[in-house]
Every structure is written in structure tokens, then in C-alpha cells.
Image (cartoon, rainbow, N blue to C red; front, side):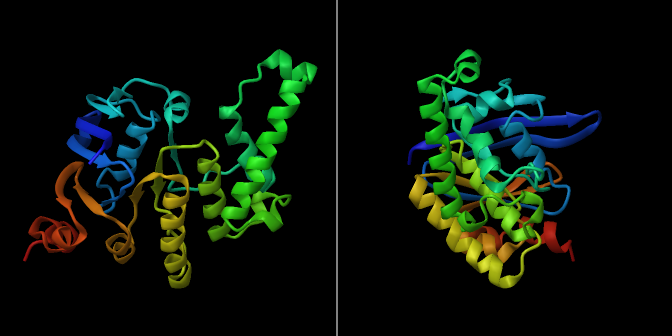
Length: 254
């Protein structure tokens, strides 16, 4: 099992509140790894620590054996970690195509002067960016609406577009924060197949936060459970489902 991502004693304190406390886990290359827990358990805070949006209070996070701790978000994205957000953060005043193109520019090398002078190298890169953007839009089922504003899309379509934007970074690890939020049963079923397809096509490792427990149990290879900022269980879905601490966290003690 090749470990691609590892957290060791990861902590984040907000004053006296321990939002994430001594959380340790590792994720294997190619795995779909689920992160569940009640509201306020610290799941999104953990994603924010992993992507540099929130500084850590203690512990370390490493990607392929090299530390990510202290790096700004754009450096972490460059290294190969992309994400979506619990609350969709698209550029809603831009077209679907431009939302993808914006993210794809992290993989270009033309400098400011080349772009201003519109050199041949700069033009070639822009053409490659656009071709890649259309390819991703096709993958997420939005190619026919590529020139429409993102604001005009349904909630489910915006979710898919945000995943497409994350894929434009060429990530090795994809973090999905509640991708099924607001979807109906049919859309959730379709999403499960879509995540597997994306994982296989792009050779990704996927970390997933999700409240819809049946989806997580059906999709994930392993699951970690947070409660009040602490890791209370980790393992295969069948093991986690029967864990007394997990049952108590969701249902309460007798």
C-alpha cells in the first residue's frame, strides 16, 4: 500500500475550542477515503488544514513524504491537491468554460510579458488550456452549456462544474466536501458512479466528506469518523458501521 497523504497529530484550535485535536491517519494511492461525523465534528476544518486555507496549530501533514504544513493554498494546489467546497465557490459571473480555464492556468508557464505580447508560446498554451477545458466539460456532462454563465446552472450542475474545475489542476488527490449536498436520490446514485469514473480515468486518490451515510458506505474503501474534533474510528465501511463509538456519536448513548 503506497501512502500518498498522511496526517500526524494534526490540531487546530480556535481560542479554547479544539476544532481538530490530535488527528492521525493515512490515505493510500488510488483509495476512495471517506470522512464522516456529526455536524460540527471538524470535517471541513480538517480539509481546510490539508489545503492551507487554515493554518495548523500543531502536527504535520505530508504528501508523498514531503511536508505540506505551512504552505499557502496555491502551492498545495501546484503539488497536486485539488478540492471542492461545502458551499459552492464558482465564479458565477463567468461561463462554465472560463471557470475551468481559470483553474487550468496553474499548469501554464507563460509569464506576464509573454501574455501581454501574445507570443507564439503564449498562444499555444492558451489553445491547450481551452482544449483541456472542453475535454473536462465533456467529462462532467456540461460541454453543451460551456458558454453559459455558471449562475444559470442548477445546483447539481454547479457541483459537477466545481469538480471539473478541481480536475483542471491535474490533481493527484481530490478532496470533495459534501458533493451530494442538495441532490435527490437519483442524482446521488449517479454521483457515486461519476466519482468512481473520475478516480479511474484520472488515476486519482479521493477524500470525501459526506453526510449521506449510505453513499459513503457504498463508495468508500475506508472511512474515518470524527466527533468533537477527534478521530473515534477508522476502517472498512462494515467495521465502522458496527463501531459502538460511531453509533453513539450519531444516535446518542442509551
